[in-house]
Length: 65
Image (cartoon, rainbow, N blue to C red; front, side, top):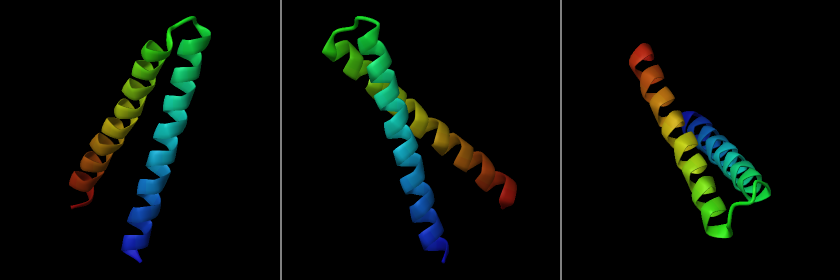
């Protein structure tokens, strides 16, 4: 049961990170950025969301243990 919850939560975080990256890339491209610059912006947004999720998970793990 807990393995399924962990896998679903991980999938949800990855989907949210991909949506944030796609949005950041699209906004950068609409702002006139070149394709490499927009891709860099999208990669930065993806990494930021994953890092934030990791930090929140670590904080919650400390609270519940």
